[in-house]
Amino acid sequence: MTADTYLTRIGTLIRDARRHKDMTQNDLAELLGTSQGAIGRIEQGKQNLSLEMLARIGEALDSEFVQVGSSRPQNLRIEGGKQLSGAIDVKTSKNAAVALLCASLLNKGRTTLRNLARIEEVNRILEVLTSIGVRTRWLPDSNDLEIVPPARLNLAAMDEEAARRTRTVIMFLGPLLHEFDEFQLPYAGGCDLGSRTVEPHLAALKAFGLGVHATHGFYECNVSMGVVPSRPIILTERGDTVTENVLLAAARHEGETVIRNASPNYMVQDLCFFLQELGVEIDGIGTTTLTVRGRRHIDVDVTYSPSEDPIEAMSLLAAAVVTDSSITIQRVPIEFLEIELATLEGMGMKYEISEEYFSKNGRTRLVDLTTIPGPLVAPIDKIHPMPFPGLNIDNLPFFALIAAKAEGTTMIHDWVYENRAIYLTDLTKLGAKVQLLDPHRVIVEGPTPKWRAAEVMCPPALRPAVVVLLGMLAAPGTSILRNIYVINRGYQDLAERLGALGATIEVFRDI
Image 1 (cartoon, rainbow, N blue to C red):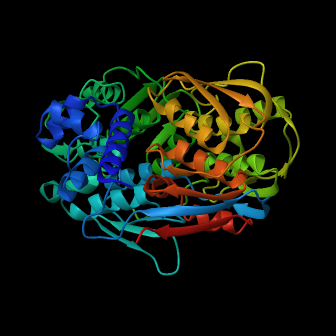
Image 2: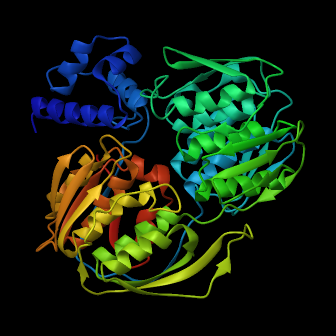
């Protein structure tokens, strides 16, 4: 491969990652201290790049184009075309884990989180927490994490690089507004003030006296002491993280806070259960109206076990479907997959489920689910996400893969994200027929007559990246999936665990 070809390939990756972050070329240029024209030339493969510049671009876009001074990116080599068999446990929730780590900032006592997912997203938050003085340690021979706060957080020492690699830092706002009159938080590129993902947080937290303005790469925050909610907080969008942020702020407000249009999704419920362990009173868990009575000071030693991840459960279910396999998926949080399963039943899928039992948090209902291979048909209506209890937005990409096994035409409508549907077209490289109608919609024609092995650069979006990996399991021959950091952000040892079901997946790095 020539140098020009490499530059073109890298430029395309940078362009796709920038679009995934909802950034313009000018946004990226400002973060890097360069011109929009330079970004244009880079994305066209017409400008030489130093390793330092590649690393800076990777940091700004949260994509691992290169690692300076460390090992090369991980890749996967998949020998596809094999059926899977056996049983596999669903790991605890990624999104609950990150919320609970942020919530630990509310507690002056020791927090122990049991069986936490050891994923890159968790690692980034731990790096941030450690840098500001929080003591964290994994307990021996376990996935249990112990968290002990300092007497005073040192925000000036925050690991900015780690903070910019996770959007979760936005959820520090709720806890920190009770600790500081003024503070500064770095943010990842693309989350500009007033953007869809950030504005609802700032609007809701104004009720607690928080004012925020964005400078280059930072949120500058000031808190008007004595300002408390005087009426119900109405969320302008039923988002998971904005609901969590308001819950975190309300947890240390001694009065009553009413949150309307709140998300009742799985990670929000786990956060509520944890806050109750801290002594916070919460009514309405699992509904769209939450009433919170907080505590000004929280200093308790607490142990909590987050529930299992419904998105990982859906990933494993999709793996079974695409490989025509019968596997048993254990510890499935059924309450958060009922619409998905109803949709699959409408497509002709058959499965068996066990009696219900409880997760270790004592609240979340679990089942064991055994898949039964068989023919599928495309649904009559389009498949689209809705806030819980609707079909989960993070589960939508897996239906593109499943639709590629179904007879007929399926429309997948990803109305939430601007560009994520684009990455589903990577399935065409594996033989599937996926047509992009616009940035939100794809048409999938099934069943795929012949899956074929391919070499693919991992999409920068987590769930589409896993979709490509699972598609490779169906393709006879050797496929290569390059640069899987994004998968490691959300899944613990996924390749190894699929291997335990009979998949042949090798983790390797380029020499």
